[in-house]
Amino acid sequence: WRSDWKEKCRTKILSCDGMIALISKNTPTADGEIFEIETAYEEDIPVMLMYINSDRPYLSGILKDKLVNLWSWDNIKKFIKGL
Image (tube, rainbow, N blue to C red):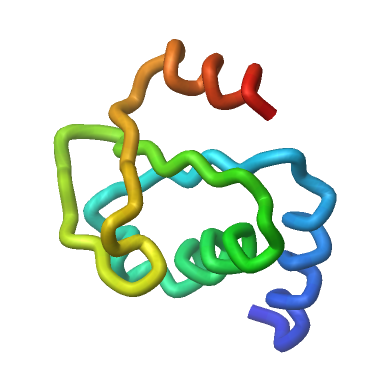
């Protein structure tokens, strides 16, 4: 990773109307994904967390106690329409 990736990532996130974060068994140790989600929350970008399969990993930190939706096109459609 280049050292300025976080700054570039934040700039991209700021241009978004919302973020759908896909949650898998790898999410708890995916530092880049966690940074992206944290950044969206910090910048008041609407975030929908969504499990991508039947794995339900323990989530801590910024993700602890957040609602994680089940994967469905209806959930995605509702989120996008609500932006």
